Image 1 (cartoon, rainbow, N blue to C red):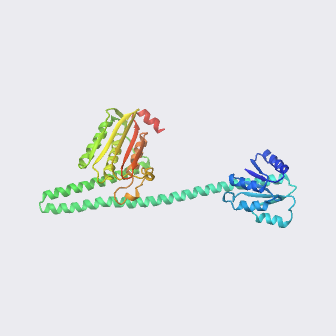
Image 2 (cartoon, rainbow, N blue to C red):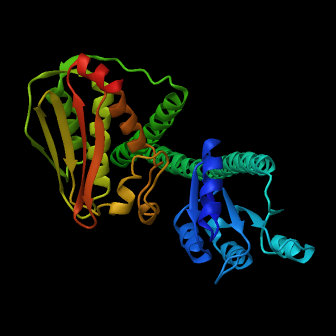
Image 3 (cartoon, rainbow, N blue to C red):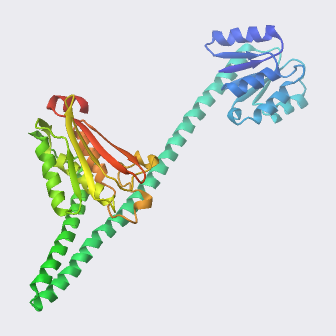
Amino acid sequence: MILIVDDRPENLISLQKVLQAHNFEVDTASSGEEALKKVLKNNYVLIILDVQMPDMDGFEVAEAISGFSKAKDTAIIFLSAVNTELKFITKGYLSGGLDYITKPVDINVLLLKIKTFYRIYEQNRKLNEVQEKLLEEIEFRKQAEHKKDEFISIASHELKTPLTSVKGYIQLLQRSLKRDDKAIAQNHLEKASIQLEKLNELIVDLLDISKIESGKMKFNMKTFCADNMVNNAIEMLQQSNPDFKINKLGKTHEMIFGDEMRLEQVVINFITNAIKYAPGTNQVNVTVNIKDGKLYLAVKDFGIGISKEQQHKIFDKFYRVEENSNRFNGLGIGLYICSEIINRHGGTIGVNSVPDEGSEFYFIIPITEGEILKNQI
């Protein structure tokens, strides 16, 4: 938009009509004070500014505009019928003007200049957009590189820990066998098995995220009983965590369509996290039901909880809650994998949590093939 500033109405109207006839959007101001108010409210590509005005002349207006951050790139053309001497023209350029035209104005010349300023403005705008995108891309690649390095460091540490433990238990097992102490040997073997299972879980997560990244994560979609799937997950984790009471609330005998193994993986992840992030507590609630043609499953713990600021990031790849990263092991990819599995089922995944009161992770998925396909589109 162009702003014309002139204290003479006839000048404003005539120039406004000419510019509008050439498809320029035009605004007007009849004084320097009015012009400054409009510049603060609106964005202008070009200001055509009369020099000789009462109270506040064009030079003063231009100097004031140059102090406005939002108008620092706005082009100014001075028009003057009286101040045509070189010293005034020089002052116009020093005041921030990009051109100084004396009256009477050759309208064709003025139009050419305006079109040139518009073209320069558009070129600068596009260059700025490209520059901003490049800076965003650079920033994204720096952050991505940092996340990758951080992940490699975490993964190396997490993989090394169970491996070191297994190595230690095997050495102790060998000594026990030499002493023919079968009871202690059995104890060392069981502990080594636990560490191997942890190692296996980490490797499975790494393989899953690799498949997600490459688009090769396969799903075996078929009809199965949701209740049996949930019961299997609870039974397995109850056996490995006898001190925790895993309460199942609700049930359904309806058959649903989906990948039973992958959905069980999500339930296991939810319950495992609920136990891990709730030290000092001894129960977890698993709610399951079907309503309005959708399966709802939620796992609630009574542990440390998650702050509201961090809840929207919890399903991001490699995200780990900073204040808990040193207290609890993990790669920060389990919930990301869960979110990908639920997304492939056309569903939603989320969390409700209050710090120091606990968290409830949940997912909702359609139960028929048609609804899943519809939700994926």
